[in-house]
Length: 254
Length: 85
Image (cartoon, rainbow over all chains, first blue to last red; front, side):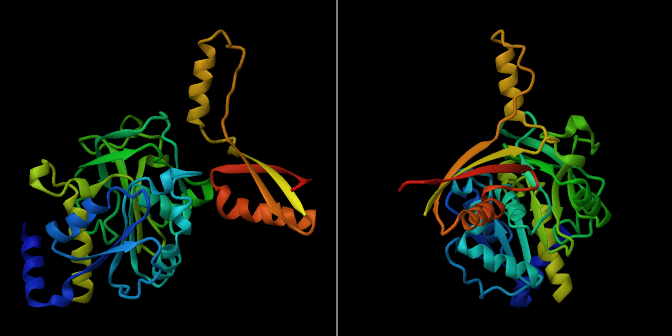
């Protein structure tokens, strides 16, 4: 892949182009190790583990990215993400996001970001009531975001989901804003990229699988790109999102 | 003074409640098909100390709005009463 070459090339010449990632671990997070492995070993980036009780994230600048992994933080008690949102580190994350720092939540991370008010809407129980764990397809809906900027709008990506609460909902006014501001990052679709009710696994409004905030520096998505970045796993469709993010940083600062 | 707050949280009327639907189907299979609608929410009780009922209510509402209830998806009502320790 030409970009990969560029990435390694640039990194070997200018260490400054390494992107720094922080991965927050909440009690009950269970995708943190996968995410750290992908960022560090597959993408070759600098990664720091952050415990949810440590509120000091001053080692990160707004060029860096804080990630919230999947899992069942605090056992999903009360509502998914509701209690994690009050972990000490979250005040710092909210401040970091408000200063323009990049924050990306996957699955439970997305739910926490919604509860924290960093993203609009909420993730409700799947309309079929069941936990769904399977590969399905999503289509990038815009290239105007750091995690989608190198993706093709015409190609459906095969990415697994694993959730019981993934039905994206926001009230009419919030939905109108999300659409008007081009905040939908991914929609559930079929293998050919057709977005329809049949390809909607959980009843999300407009087949939404991922969104960003109005300022386009906070991202949330239910599918798990960190579970499909290596050939050995038989699927590398998730890799493009990480490459987009790191490349966006190089283009901005390079 | 010690107050007991009994809070009922329900999913917004316009939202699909899959848990309620599943229970509805279950009931209809046991000759209880006259039960038309089931919706499931949460019941939370809190004991709190406050100098007056007004203060107790303010605290309960703050707890609901900040953590116990997500107003995008739920509504709540509550009752409050003074209790012995």
